Image (tube, one colour):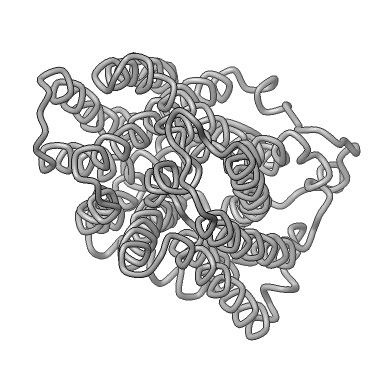
Length: 438
């Protein structure tokens, strides 16, 4: 496996985001920019769908089912898709998967223009989008290390975090503005245009066949599972990500928070949904010093523990503001509550992004190219299915108990998981980026 040489291991110190991958690789630059545009559209539609379904049903459980219905097909495609990425030209796989995913925004926009109020067609198209998206994510992860030199992988991880932050900040905020100003149909139509920009970046890629292609099938999938079984450090990092996704998300309850706690309607929901991404962007722009950290396992554990604290604090604030007498309205929102909740969500997002930068770098450095598709197929399953589990957890628990319960309990569960895993995995605590061991 390639390892950094002495020059790479001691890069010049910088305090801000390292833009070198965008400067040195035109293919990566196009891929990154188009990915941001497509991701903004995906997030825009995801938030708008939640607002629309809550407006139709008045139920957080109904909003949670947007993700719940997608779980099983995402599991199937997530497991099988990685074997395709390791067997065929990754550009062609990405084009095929994106073509299938494109059906979803077109279908959702058509439903909105036709003013369809039945919930099941929206569930069907969002399930299609999430399912195809799991294969798109696996292909993108395997492509990144082939577009830049090894020494730039930490910078690529930071740029990936910044991209995710821009997507989840601009998309939800734009959704709130567009839904409030123009309605759902125009909002979904704009997603179609953003998706086409994403296609431009994919089509401009060169051919990217795997270095040692495998044959797709159960045998290749079993080989991927064996690699992950023996990769204790990567497995621990993924387990911590599962905990934060399952217990640290609050998006399914945001429409209810906007209606019952802070007021302000769709605009407040958009701001709350975008707040975490603001923290991601801020931490990404200040990620320069992270490139000098060698012990990535410790860094992941510390950042995840900080995230747990902020998630629990969110629950406390929801309880405090929700218990006050008087209820804010769409016309007269509680700005103090809105700002406080946005700040805590932003801090949780920043901590999650720091953990994600180290986790992505660990996975890309310690995984051979021949296995990256299958590993990311499994991890993309976590990234796509995990939030759906989190939506189901938060939505149903809030419906059964109170809005503040999922966050407060979730913070405690994340903290407990982090403490247990780091205590029982000494190799993870000692992980050295200069001598990466999966």
